[in-house]
Image (cartoon, one colour):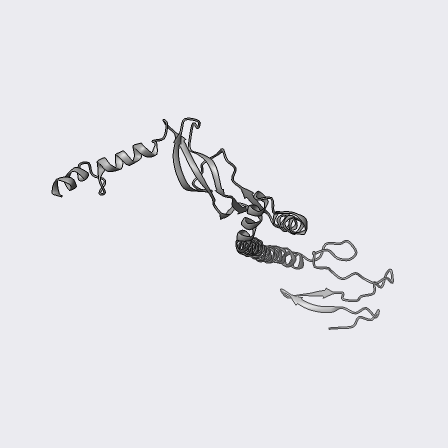
Length: 245
């Protein structure tokens, strides 16, 4: 590096046998202003194009930075999607768990109530018989009415009336007969009322069932038929027994 007589600072290089001078002073000696350095876009601060080498390096570096940013965004988006899927599955499992717990709790409560009410059914039968005989009076009637109302609030329902269609799911047939007054199996007599809690049968109603048919056989006809069939139920047994004697 050499220093000229007028005080300027410059570097002297040799290019193919000829000297090249580069002025690196930051203060312009003519205007006295600060010179702007060349930025990364290839343009100097004063708006002048930067050397071609610097512009080419900046242009080559831009696509690489954009590619890296795109890959990072894609990776983060994939991670967000995975975490979102995990949270959705966890939420669905929790909702199903709550539903199972609520359902099991309701079933357990219904079973406990049904068991307690089943133990009270004989008491309800005694109250019903006392009412039929006119003995349900005074304080006993008030207590009985309070008990019945409490059971109704729990969802206990009494059922079974004469004339109801016979349903083996809710009725228990204790007697069977034929009658021309019915057009299908009918509970013509309720021997013991039934009780249910919601859709659960606590005790089936015990009834006498009548089916369509002719006049039922009289006791004399039934005895005659029994004599003809004999003790084993086969025809001729009575006669065979008489001959053997």
